[in-house]
Image (cartoon, rainbow, N blue to C red):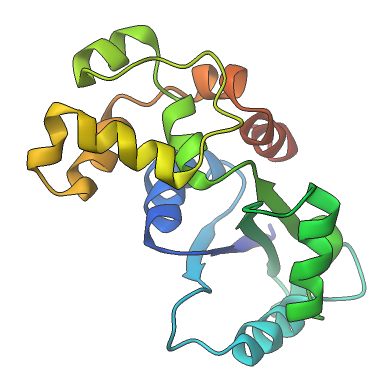
Length: 190
């Protein structure tokens, strides 16, 4: 039996929290070992990430064989931010990380906060005392923070707000509300 390992490169702590709490349990159905790496940390050099990606890559099937029973793969997650389109963002990332393969890049539209809010149904929004969204594809961090600061949660650290969202998260709802989240889930059979 082949043991499968997946490295997920994410921008920062909020992304890592999301992938760790929401998506890791789903991905564990297909992978034996999952590591989540924050690549936007100041102490991590781009060359290190580029070399790490190169060590994962292989010429067959996108997996690097680690001994006779291991297969190693990766995905690279990034917010679209101010890029005009997903293709432009992927090209920007590949200039920074030349070893990055185009088909391993997943772009979040607009930012990870849109994926957080996508998973809340009306009941969860009432419970959290925030407005509900039909679609979250245009949500940016600033909009998310505005929701937080106007809510009853503003008296507590914003990390608690993220955790409250995670406690009430529904993947099926998120797939309906955010196209790039649905794309990710479809790609990984979630």
